[in-house]
Length: 536
Image (cartoon, rainbow, N blue to C red; front, side, top):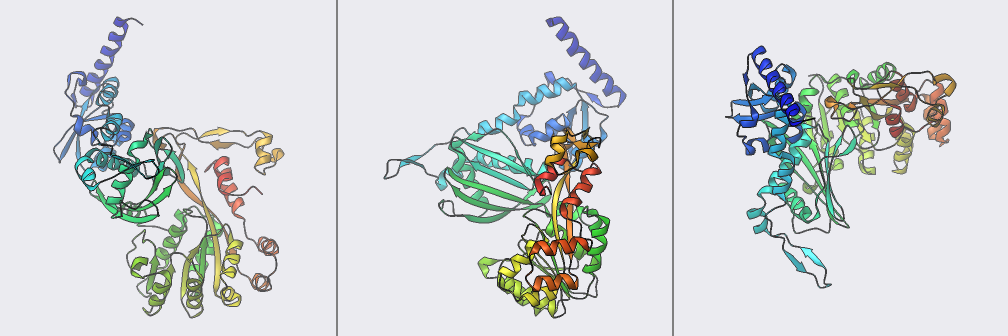
C-alpha cells in the first residue's frame, strides 16, 4: 500500500467522522491537531478509555468533554456519565485518531514509567554482606508521588473491572499484579520492576495504618477510599514470602452491593426450584440451626443475607455478628468482630443472647466455644443462621463432631445443611455452541452415547466481558434435610457414605447434579463446572 493510499484511507475516515458529527448534531474534532491534556487522560482508568474508545478533552467538574468515534453509542455515553458523575459533551473523531491519541498519551506505560523514575534506591549491607532495601519515612513522604499514582491506578482499575481481590505478588525479578474477577485470577498489567516492591507494599501499609518497618510477620489492616463519590472499604493482608512481601486487598464495595441487593431474594441467586422450596420452608421455622457451607468465596454470606432479607419483619429482633459486615441491611442489628478489642465471635454471641434476639446470624463458626453457644441458642428458642467451611453437607457433620460438641445436642438443633458453590456464567453476548468428543465426555462422567450430539457452550470473549468469556456467577447447591432416620444414623456414628445413600434415596440432589443442570441449560461451561465439583 502506497503513502497515497494510506493518506486516502485516513481522509476517508475523517470524512466519515464529519458525516457522523453532522448526522448526530455534535461537533467534529480533528484530534491530530488538538493539544491533549495528558494529566487529564492519565487520571482516567486505562481500560475504561480503551473499552469505550474515547479521549477526555476537558473536565470542569460539571461537564466532561470527550472525543469518541461513535457519537451514536448512547449506552457508552451513559456508562461514562454514570461512572464519572458528569454530564458528557461529545465531539466526533475518527476511530484511528482516537486510538492514536491514546497511544500518544502513553497512558498505560506512562504511569508505570513515572512510578519507577526518580527514586533514590537506598541500599545498606547486612552483616552477612547481603543487600537490603531501606524504606525511610522521608523517602516515602518526599518521593512517593508516582507510587501513590500507581497504587491508586491499580485500585481504581480493579473497582472498574468488578474485581473482588487485588493480588500483589513478589517474584524473583518482578512484581505481578493480579485481579480476581468472578472467582478467577487474571494478570492486571505488565510486571513491575522488582526494585519497587518495597515501595508499593509500604504505600499499602501506610494506607492501612500498619507497621512499615515490620517485614517478618503477617499483618492485617483495612482502609477506606472515596472513588467517584462512592465510599469503598478495603481489607488488606500482608504476608512475608521468600522474595519480600505479598499483599492481598479485598474490595468491599458496600454501596454497589447495597444497590444490587436492595431487593435481594433467594430466587435471584441461582438455586433450583426444588432446593429453593425446601430452604424457604426451613428459614421460617421458629427455632433451630441453619448451616450453610462451602469454601471461601462460595457465596455463603450472600445466601444468609438473602434469607434474612426475606424473613425480616418489625415483629422480630434480628442480630448478626460478622467479620467483616459486608452488606448493610436495614432493619437488622449488625455487629462487627473486633478481635484487637476483645470482641470475638464467642464473646459477641454471648452478648447477643442478652440482647433479646429472635433470630441470630453468626458469620462463621471457627472454634468449639462458638459452636457450643450457637447450638445452645438454637435449642433455647432462637433461629440461628451460620456458616462453616466444609466441602459438602456430610463433611460439616464431621467438622462439628471433631469440635467435641455434644452430638445429640448438635443433631437435635439442626434444621438443614446447605452446601453451595459458585460457577461462572457464560457471557450471553459471545458464548459459542460446541460438541464434545467421547474422551472429554467420559472424563467428565458423562455418557458419550447420551450426550455425543448434545449442544454445549464454551466461552469466547468480547468487550462486554473484558475478553474473559464469562460475566457474573451463579450458585449450585445440595440440601440435606435431617429426617429421623438420618439423625439416628449420625448419632450411631454410621459411615457417612451410608448416610449419603439414604439422603439421596430420600430425594437429596447432589451438588454435581445441580451443576450439570446449569451446564445442560447453557448457563456455564463444562470446564468451569469441573473446576468446582468432583466428577462422579
